[in-house]
Image 1 (cartoon, rainbow, N blue to C red):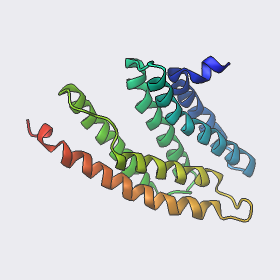
Image 2 (image 1 turned 90 degrees about the vertical axis):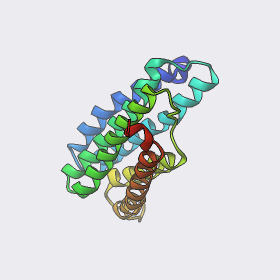
Image 3 (image 1 turned 180 degrees about the horizontal axis):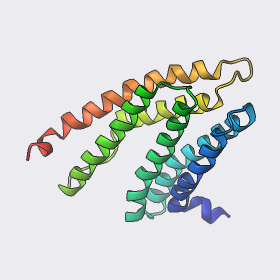
Image 4 (image 1 turned 135 degrees about the horizontal axis):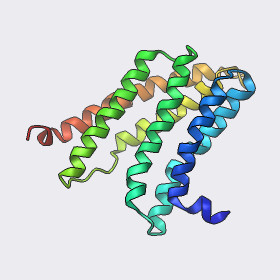
Length: 182
């Protein structure tokens, strides 16, 4: 069991497999299912850190991991946001901006990789991811929890996620604008 959870590619595939579980749970938006969806999302989000940590620590960086890790991240975050929009718990325009930035930066990262440039995530991108995760977990819970308004907390972090999403997206395109001109 330990080997499965310390294998970076297994952790990435766990993140992908968590997506349909979260989607199905959110199709039944009651307190139990939304809390369970938030738990699955949180566990999957933690694997984003762990897969990279184990890959570097154990020298298990693979092409499959390099390709699938960002795909898994985008599937997880985009699916959760889309389900939140479908329930009317998040404004569609915010999710369109967030997913649009992800797609645009993914395209830019493909150009960067093709040109042999460094494409590691920026600090702004890491803040963006952190705020997105911090927003999605309470937004998935949605209902008041332990006397706290989970939806209001999630909405607060969502505005931060939106700001970092725009800022980091602009930063990527400004930093690599020379690659877009050739």
